[in-house]
Image (tube, rainbow, N blue to C red; front, side):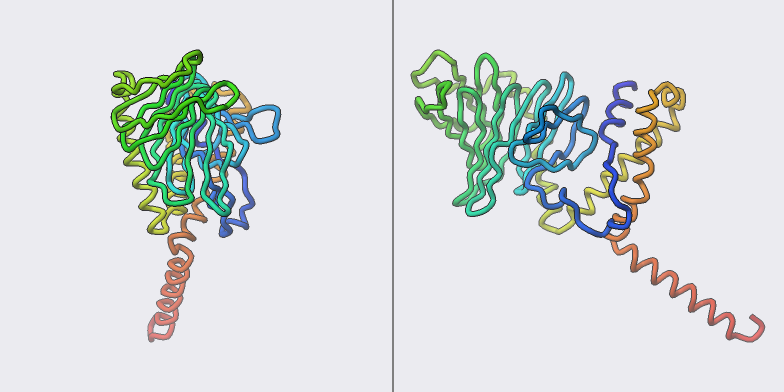
Amino acid sequence: MKNLFRILLCVSFVAVFVRSDFAKPKAEDYSIAYINDYEGQCEVKKKGESISEAVGDIYVPLYEGDAVITDEDSRMEVVFDDSTIMKLDPNSRLVIKNLNRKNEAKTVLELIKGRIFGIVKKLMNKEEFTVRTKLAMAAIKGTELVVETGDQDKVGVYEGAVEVSHVDMSGNILNKVIVNKNNEIVLEKYLHGPQQVRTLSSNFVKRYRELKDLRQKIEYLRELRHEGRTRQFKLKRRLDRIKNLKMMMRSDPKRYQNLSPDQKALMDEIIKEEPYYQAQYNNENGGERKTKLMIKKYMDNRKTNQDEPGK
């Protein structure tokens, strides 16, 4: 219960915006990458900043040079503009090196530590999606994969194929190999010869169900984007999270009283944002027009009753 409350507190925080500006699209609606979900203690280190900041919101936009970090028992999902999704395991750090969208669609990520699972849409000409580690450069052309870095670097493939380049500590390519479906490759720091491709290890196979859940999620996000309902979905998620947090507060008032003043202030700010997001949601769903029609109907009925004898 304690962990659930902490998670809801973290993921329910929403930034303060100008209320009169609710109809205007925000940066999150156009960013190439954003935080789609998270749990536990996660951080973002913005490009050029010396310290990282705790993640307190979903849909936080990410840009070139930003780094996302997960702590122990923490996880994070990052979604890109083409509905590609990457999920960070606990104790991971991922840097967004390139998000070029000018003459070509080029995305380059660098996994500093930890492990990521990803589902990358099938790429077209002039599209590139690459994940780098200390020892590997994985060129992806539409696949489902896992990348891990530590004492060894591993690249596993669940669907599709990945061209894995073994690089030295200076970034020079030593050799290349194609890793196909249900296979993986392990790269060693001091072995410069071609590494052997092998069947997916049991640890990676066990995570297949989790990857299946990610697949369903990204397919739904792609469907929303195709139908033009992404913004409505985002607003509904925010409202649902606020609603869940308020329910938690009512069901466990003693825990709320035991929170620090800063935590209470944060929760008060969360609740204040509910009318703002509700206004946006109503506007997206034609709420303004419905309200005007209801008022017109009421006024017409009132006029009719006044005009009739005996009314």
